[in-house]
Image 1 (tube, rainbow over the protein chains, first blue to last red):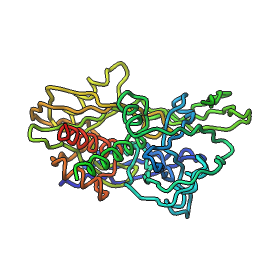
Image 2: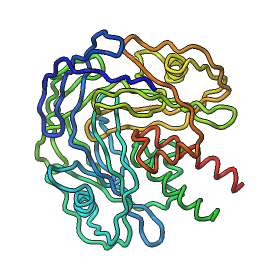
Image 3: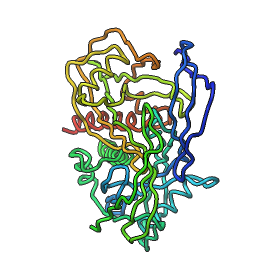
Length: 183
Length: 183
């Protein structure tokens, strides 16, 4: 495979925010030409798929300012410096839904928008759920909903679930279910 | 369900780039308090899963500056103003892999990072492939690889595929395959 590395000639931070920073990178391309890359630097995130004992999934409905609408998503949150992903996952699950989990299973991690952002998201499933009281952060407001996997899959198919991490996990859980059925 | 809409009090564009803009929104929260939201405005994207007649998937390997490494992804590209998503999909597939497709099927669309960006990505599968010559844009360099679905699924499981849209589609194709087997 050809090595397609782009060498950084110069790097400038043009915005430092609460959620992300923005950097401009002047690069040397594999063919020797130069170009500029726009980069969103993000601390990373975790998302948790809480599955109840009767095989339902808990989702949160949240207003997302970039989209100017409410959408369904897995409970999720930003990574914090020095905090392990699994610890953040338990904390975010409890804050957003009030649910604490006996067992947390890491499923995978992926970049959400590798073309312009470095956000890496770690995906977990959570089982052995105990319901408590939600206590979201001061600027965070969510509705909690419970869906069967079949309902959730239909929402992915008809566009009612419009979020990458959530669509991924619903398919993951359905795939595990089918693998179990096929033995 | 509680309406959790955040009202925009003030909006400012602080960066206008080639790939995205950055806006700051001062908002009134559902509880009447105020907060600031950082928003990446992106034109949207398409991604295509090209499936060969012997059930292999074509992926591209690309250096992604935000990640400072090469990763495997579906052929993909940004939406262009006034161009239909399906047209962009055919064009990007041909540019990046040299492949033209008889049939394009829309699978779903999702937001990649709804917490801070409005990027919406339309996902397609492509069949009836004819190989031609790739002709990428002047600052775009890719390697094309062909994987069986089983190989691709293993890469998702062991972290070799690290991209949300690509992980989603591989599971989608496996799920369709299993549904066919189960009748």
